[in-house]
Image (tube, rainbow, N blue to C red; front, side, top):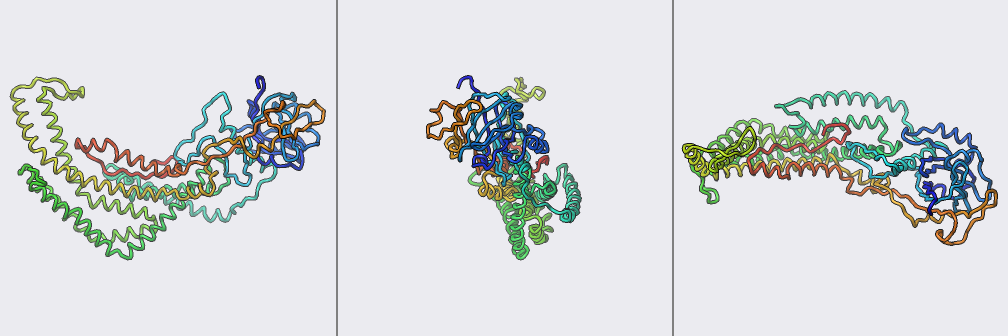
Length: 602
């Protein structure tokens, strides 16, 4: 095949069937021997075909549609000479019985010998949401869409963009399929509702920007964050509804992701509200029993058990001999703080039933996720005193640990250089060494007592953080439920393309034959014998069938993956372990939810 050209022809599956009349092939000539055939026009001459193509509206980054060849029936005449002689690349094909043959490939009227690679694709005229992508579709709308790098060859995605546009060109030439249009009356009825919701939403979003102690409400309160996310999603849903993202009629590419995201969010919200109504009805009906149980549980786990643990630490817990003076001081300090907390929190116990009722009714509006947010904020408020204890114990432990480290450097004849942030050598006087030895000995004997109290309150703080983290994970399961993604993937895998593959031994290979060499004007001799293509001294034609590969099912759970990555990076990292060892403060649980809206802050 040395010295011959290679032509890549993308051929629609519809033209593999027997045709009733001859006609011009329309599509795109992309250069470098690449031709995308979109359809056959069999009812017009060249001027009429050019008129149809000039009226075709397409994307700015695509080439103009042109006449790329002629497909004739067996025994019928050839096409007009003028368009063939002026075309930089012309495909002269014909049909014989149920097969298609390539007579010649011409460039400005001259026959160009070469090899033809025919790629058969499914244009899916009645299913415009089917399309081809060179790389897997990005369902995460917050991720920017990447473009193909500039190379000397034509990018595959650029070719596939023309293949995807072939169905639009076909419907433009042969008539658009019937579409259901919404009347002006329906749009007028919903426009004022949309505007009213958007105006109310803007007020709620401004309220969520209020700062409490230097922090936004959405960063401190789970209810504030959930309300902010619901409002932002509602505004974005209205924008997508007005942009008709709820239909499958639209441009390929991001439109399928927007369509699936729109209906998946709607289905997740509906499922969330249904669960919220069920749970809310139970909470409202049994508010007294639930509030009583919550009060008993909170009193048992946040007050009684804490007092029992502190009293147990006043003796010799588990055989550990602690310093009696420091142990008694710390026990009295924390017991007084527990007593102070009970006095402060006592008036709020009478409001627990109201909290349960509010949580129940919030499920009818915000769904079960809003109820989980109320529970998370209630847990943070009722365990606030344990956070105080943890902060006190952490500061004492960290101060003593830093002091012991500095005194240990004193024995080594070193000190910390604050300006250069390093350990330098230093000569100490005898008095300094004596005082350092006394302080080091005292702190060493007091360290086990401080360590025991520190571990006690660290364990309780970690328990609260893990409970809040579990609630955040449950919120993520409800807010980012991919049930509709999975249903659409099972029902129609081609809706979420994940690349293309080529089949060599397909049924379409039998639809193409190779034309024998012939002189211009002589009758065409067709070979109908079953001789393999490689054994014929004729035009070499290789037939491939291009199929769209669906994305894996695991890619549909990308939202859960992001939540898990964020959770594990925050609470299952080496930084948390280091903070526990050196006595740094472990901050409250970070909000893991995000809106999945392009341009919105996570």
